[in-house]
Length: 113
Image (cartoon, rainbow, N blue to C red; front, top):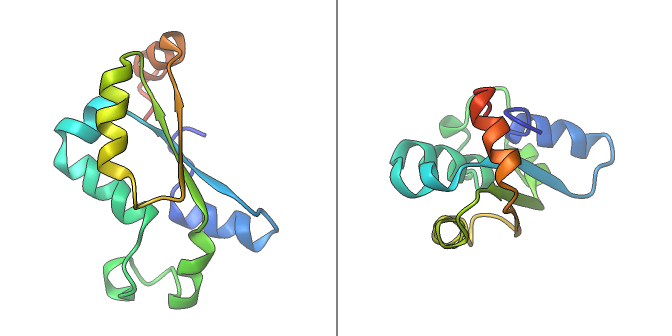
């Protein structure tokens, strides 16, 4: 899903029986070159145990419901995808990638992600 798979959504789906959740499609260029984008998605995949840092709408016990999470990285440059994945490994339970350039072009042209 595009811009719809953040922590709160993943917690909701886990409450209703999902056993595995996924992030939105992450852009490798942004993960590599945009520190704010990287930090936002790392925090979203691997939230701290301090409720003050994640907002009052997510309870402390809910953090475990955000896991397991698979990060999805989309791009058409394999080396850039690998570089981006190295930045998020350890913050998620698995990484899936798509090297379909058509999909990335659609995301960018429609202003998704």
